[in-house]
Amino acid sequence: DAVIPSAAARAFAEAGNNAEVPAIIEASLEDAWDSGLVALYGELPGEDVLRQIEQAEKWLIGHPGDAPLLLTLGRLCVRKQLWGKARSYFEAGLSLEESFAGHMELARLLEQIGDPEAARTHYRRSLDLAAVEMHEQALSASGFESPPALAGTVAPAQNGAVAGVNESQKN
Image (tube, rainbow, N blue to C red; front, side, top):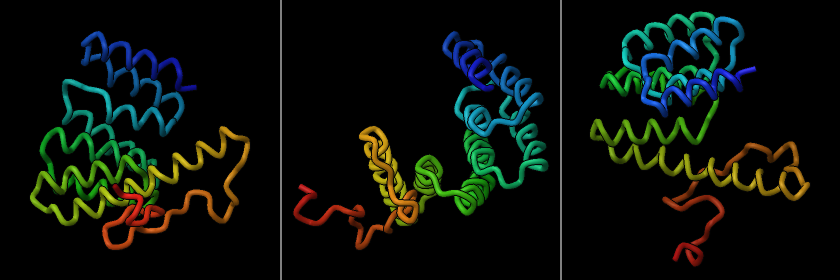
């Protein structure tokens, strides 16, 4: 269970002890792989980001289809301004599993490297995914579930509009 190492890593990060954060997560992942903990590895600070990238790339050999690991690698590469590698990791992760976080990270990166049009596309897609997630959470909280054919699906935004919002609802 990743609850304890996750809480410990967050506590060390909040205390400013960034050297211990990666070590806690790495030790836990040696015992049992957990994609949520891998995602945390890319979110929390560490002091030796290049070493973290090397570690995460080793994990990628054993977990090549892990979208959260690819997102983590992208985030770590952004910290070291490895723009090309970061973009490749974000795109690879999104090709496996679309996510709000993946599209947001890629959009920010694309803005950073001077591609605002591509960034807008990913910002729009992240909004689409956020809307679906919020809808599914609301249904779940009310005791209803999305039909299996609709769960997790999003209609792409048309003409710059957020899916499900017509022109009269924008203002």
